[in-house]
Image 1 (tube, rainbow, N blue to C red):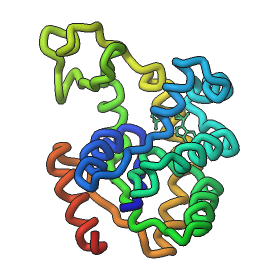
Image 2 (image 1 turned 45 degrees about the vertical axis):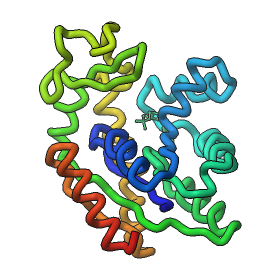
Image 3 (image 1 turned 90 degrees about the horizontal axis):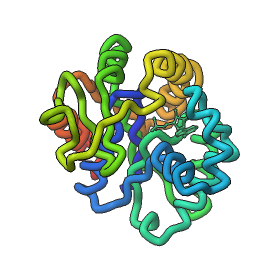
Image 4 (image 1 turned 120 degrees about the horizontal axis):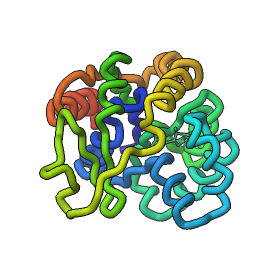
Length: 215
Ligand code: AMP
């Protein structure tokens, strides 16, 4: 299975990518997680990405493609992958196509999780993450027992979930990532799933469209 999960920030890509990658036994590759790990471990690529991430802007394509090429060269990615949050621009999508075609591969599916913008703002405003174990909670939809993570650690607001950053990220999504809908639509791999439902229901919908693609 070689697939891309796309959708605006807050559509639930991360949550779905975890279960879809488990279902197919392929790695979940999140460029956002890779950038955050690189920043935390002090890698140079993290330092190059930080300013963009904190302002809700996209990290430049050459930096992003560098970490993606590195990740795809790891042995587990030869079995397939679920990309989450990548590609986010037309040049990234074109470069991914050419990397795959170099080894005779292509994407099996691109699934777009569609969620209206008002709902995305509500979701981001309530999201809390655990700095210790990375669990994600929501003050409205999945509230943490006693206000702290189940592992006992304090919950924090991810800097890119702040309202001004969320608005910036949505604008970036509209102008730079939404054109991918047409790009992948034209090649016939795009499937759109309504993301306005519980995570379990959205997962069912995704698995159904993937089965329809013959996977
Ligand atoms: P995410 O966790 O996927 O929402 O990503 C967090 C941030 O990392 C984004 O707002 C971007 O600044 C950066 N980022 C992640 N993936 C990409 C990508 N494919 N291209 C450019 N920037 C990215």
